Amino acid sequence: MDLDAITEYSALHPKPSGLILQYGTAGFRTKAEHLDHVMFRMGLLAVLRSKQTKSTIGVMVTASHNPEEDNGVKLVDPLGEMLAPSWEEHATCLANAEEQDMPRVLMDISVKAAVNLQQDAFIVIGRDTRPTSEKLSQSVIDGVTVLEGQFHDYGLVTTPQLHYMVYCRNTSGQYGEATLEGYYQKLSKAFMELTKQTLCSEDEYRSLKVDCANGIGALKLKEMEHYVSQGLSVQLFNDGTKGKLNHLCGADFVKSHQKPPQGMEMKSNEKCCSFDGDADRIVYHYLDVDGHFHLIDGDKIATLISSFLKELLLEIGESLNIGVVQTAYANGSSTRYLEEVMKVPVYCTKTGVKHLHHKAQEFDIGVYFEANGHGTVLFSKAAETKIRQLTKELEDEKRKAAAKMLENVIDLFNQAAGDAISDMLVIEAILTLKDLTIQQWDALYMDLPNRQLKVKVADRQVISTTDAERQVVTPPGLQEAINDLVKKYKLSRAFVRPSGTEDVVRVYAEADSQENADSLARAVSLAVFQLAGGVGETP
Ligand SMILES: CC(=O)N[C@H]1[C@@H](OP(=O)(O)O)O[C@H](CO)[C@@H](O)[C@@H]1O
Ligand SMILES: [Mg+2]
Image (cartoon, rainbow, N blue to C red; front, side):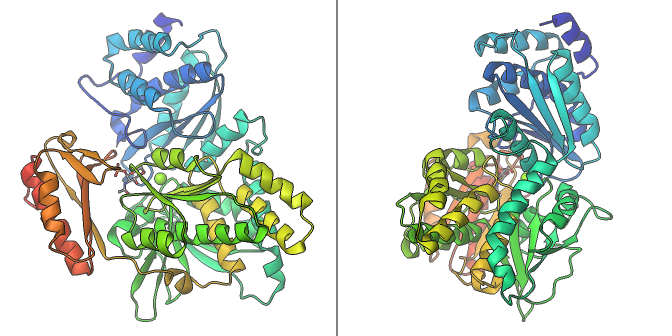
């Protein structure tokens, strides 16, 4: 390691002294102007991680659904998954080291993690459409270069596309070809195969309106459109040509405000969906004939997908196990429906896809979705091999066709990360195959009315939780207060946790009516404010 060169280059990306940032739920995220040093240092860290794992590592520059002024960065581990927790700590230490200490901290990490510095390193880089992303990704490249790492800059890509590239490169192309063309080819081939029988029928032409949050999803969907145009006609809105990124549109806005995005023409009963700013989340929605807005979130997506997979498994007669993984934010009705009606086991993990992804890996088929629409389906190696084998061996035509469908579903899902484009194609294929309208899908179960609020406190870390974040441990008295409030309402549930991406405490409540859910959420917010050091206006 050439410490002099590192010191010299680091001075070109100086850390504002005293600034402390945390590698949170989804990497570093804050105002873009505070991130130059973090980007340079994540370039350095990615090289160490690449040397240590002897694999290609990804660096994605994005702040997903955050406002346009923000930016962020996260590292992608060898199989396209989120960075390992011990390296999140290294990332936090390196990002927060004062300028003069940085080279030493870097050395310490390489010693602690037993990095062989002689090993080659290869980094792939991607970025979203934020005005600051190009310059910041250049700072990542500076970090990679000063440690003599090799790199490939994919430029503008969605977050899941970068995860896909990392996965492809570390499996010698077995997962797919590590190019955008390879990604489009793989997904569109699986989609067209899945839906080809239905195209011959007199099915109405399948069309979908997509709110792209004025983000990268618009560019990439435009590139992909012609590959699938025979099976699906998409109409893009909020494509970034006029509106501001994530402003009053996109999956996060639609989910948290429970209302339609601006900038999208919605006629009654038309099937619509929204991506988030880096296209790793998707939610569906429509207006009914009375003009009421209906949201179909990640929970209902997980339900549609798992019921489809369960039917296919039944048809091929294989006893592969399916598990559904959710977080505490999953609507109570969805959990009940999955467990009681569909009879599939449901598990709850902490918020953040890395936790869900990890749990989903325990099953032959692990379906995971956050309520906000971030998720995918993982197939174990054994399950995948079995299914591919059955497509060749089965003689019964019906069973063979079901196995072929499953095989295409495996290829259509992005196994590295939740992916709005891939999930959209899976959902469209299922709706077509099952001849379901968006209203019929929505009618699977009724969501319990719910409300999410945010509370400002002096230090959100005073709140600690257990039981997959459903119970508060500290500060003392807060859980008891929540319990007392919950008892006052029917079908009610509430929990609070510190956000990993914003400086707030999140409050979630559900109850038998919207009025009650709102009132419970307000009462719990007040308890947080009073018992956990609220600042500013009383909720
Ligand atoms: C309630 C909620 O939607 N929380 C989101 C949000 O995390 P917080 O830790 O709640 O800020 O951003 C994460 C990253 O995108 C996402 O994984 C998670 O689901
Ligand atoms: Mg996102």
